[in-house]
Image 1 (cartoon, one colour):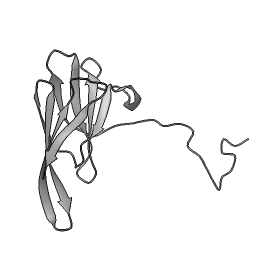
Image 2 (tube, one colour; image 1 turned 90 degrees about the vertical axis):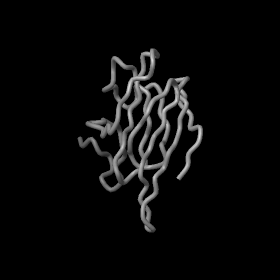
Image 3 (cartoon, helix red, strand yellow; image 1 turned 30 degrees about the vertical axis):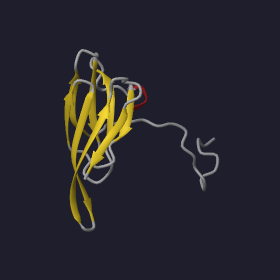
Image 4 (cartoon, one colour; image 1 turned 120 degrees about the vertical axis):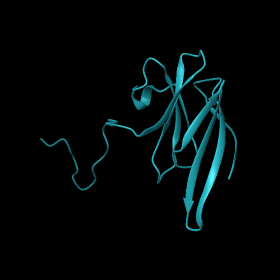
Length: 116
């Protein structure tokens, strides 16, 4: 018997993350955590908080995550504040976007503000 009951309407039964594009990585103070900037030049990146000892954790095992709102760029850490500087491309050209995030609670990182 086939694993697909209805070949005209297949459904997702599982997901497996084979690789991710980590464009920046930095430890965060003495929290035992680190931040990863995951994404690419053509899509909104994601800021992920991971355990410093397990930077390759599966997507479902990251401590916390928040959308950056722009493609991947550079990240800078100052205490529990992470600043992401990225270039956002539009039909009118490109803009530099600076966004800050509070990761003092690694399970619930929050966007604090941004400017373009």
